[in-house]
Image (cartoon, rainbow, N blue to C red; front, top):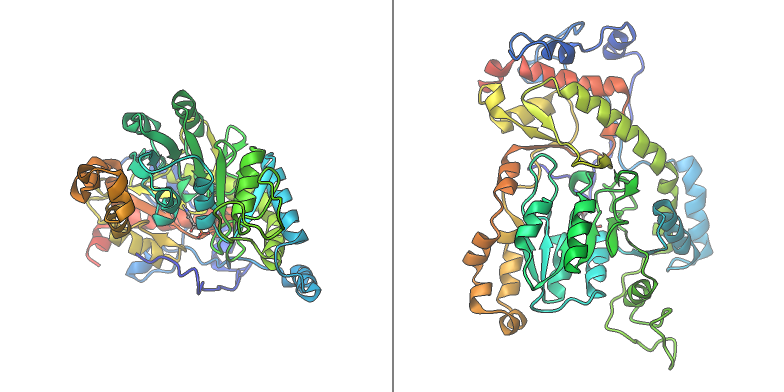
Length: 474
Ligand SMILES: Cc1ncc(COP(=O)(O)O)c(C=O)c1O
């Protein structure tokens, strides 16, 4: 799998030419009509792209369908450099007014009382669990379509992760499967709004209420995603975000926790600042007396300035992403080989951090997904990926290591820690299926394109649908 290197991201310059052949075709009204034609027949070979000069797939030597290029993250140097310079020259680099301003704005954008910023999303999640009353012997039910960062905090508390399968059409944790996993030991739920689509929070909160459970939302990929107008990260006890450089609010590194609970917020604040006094975590002796077991995970001023600059464009970009994604999804509905990931009932907006689809090889004469992805990539569509590899999180070595630790041996039975049995108990068939059928377009700038860029993605899919037999032989 070709996962972008977050630490050395490829910076691509915008080189969009207004007068390319493609834009000429669009301007002259000769747009992709394959999607429309496709609705009239289930036969792949009957599909054509009206107006396209070439229907030869790029993988077979034809021209690329998609030629736009967009960089991510984006930085308007003229506008933002003076703000960056100001903070650098002020010599106030550690947490101060800019961080406060960033937190205030992020909380306001979500209608929440508090935001605490952190060094990254991993630590936001860990801090959120550290300051909740869960302990060894407790269980937390988690979405398995994620990676290790989501679960570390649960393990730091000595609790047992329990994995509930996903809905393969939404990629999100399935509330019905959560119910099946509830035991008297269950203390929390950790939904992960994966690929930037919203998890079914109304149902999850209903379950949490019925069983008196904590909910920490991993919204690290899902900035401004919504359910019936309510943003993700605002439903649970805590909503955790990542502002890592690939995210739709990119800082490079950064994280944030939203909450309405003031006492919890002060514990979080104290935790992120050496355990020093904050609000209800009251200190008497001196300002450097540590009051709780803590960490130091503070955001810096220059990080906050980057975040504030990025935040200015976020709502506008989010709107555009959602408009483009809705357009693309509608067009792609004509193609039987792919099904765009859908929202669960109530879901209204996604961050489109990763535009996601489900692949159906049986509808494309058995064309393997890898060949489809190769052909799509050859068409110039950016960010083409197969998603997380077939390596379920509940089978990964870090968990086995934890289970071998003295502390886990002290609190759990040998049977509970038997890793083979644990893997079987937590087996998630829909997750495994998704590993093998997911298509990710992992490029946060992709949905910031024009409508004609979306048409070009459709054109790429169309060319593959019309040339399955030849692509199979490549
Ligand atoms: C689902 C999910 N959870 C947690 C994280 C951790 O965030 P960070 O990379 O900022 O530590 C990320 C981001 O990479 C993520 O995508």
